Image (tube, rainbow, N blue to C red):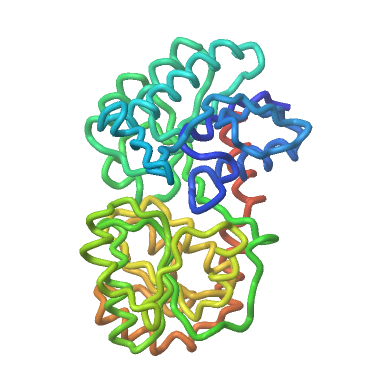
Length: 355
């Protein structure tokens, strides 16, 4: 059996209380490996709620988010401590991870890193002299590549598409993300609405979901974490009428599952090179077909005309909305059961960690 340090998150609890793909996957990793008898040290915020005899929570942050103006009219913390407060807080939490890696070095033999501040971790790992594998949940970029090569970093990609820009790195495996099919249950029937859930920002492009739904004359429920306030106010809010276009905000996991189950289709008009797209397999686990732009890893997940449609613009998206009943919801579910299940994902992580 292995002793594994899983670096989970410095920004959100594990499991997350809302939509946070990396934290949800770190939760699946920790529970899945612990269930197989491995000892897991999970580095995560103190507010994390995870309990297993083989998991020890290493609390690396007591504060992970900013407090807004309350009833007393208190000044926001980012105003009190400067505009860079949120970034500085995350760096503090990363420093705490490093401190705890050294303090607990006798309790683990291998490191599995999910943190988005990966560059800070790379050089520290070489000092610890323990094997480490870094899961690249986000796109790679040139400045990060220099750091990766300099530190001879072992990477785990989450899609084959993610490797294309930098194919000559030290990739140990591609391990697809997974979903808990025992929680994201199949629904053979649906209600009469379309769904977009995800980050609200230009790169995720929820505006095209709105335009396509309006063109098709359908109701769209749209929700998620607002990453770009200006984009939301200028590009999304003007369309919200709470009739055809309904804003549902960021929801808790149980509500998210209900929204997936009731949707006739999930719209995913992403503009960036999507490293994976966890929402795609969450929707399909509930039986909901996906209509998506074919960027990044999307074509590795969505098979055109089988479990959804791949389209190039909102006009095509609107046309395929009208054809959505041609997609068998059970086929969507079977895609996840066969290709994106947790057992398969943990099998792949075990193979890499035992190398």
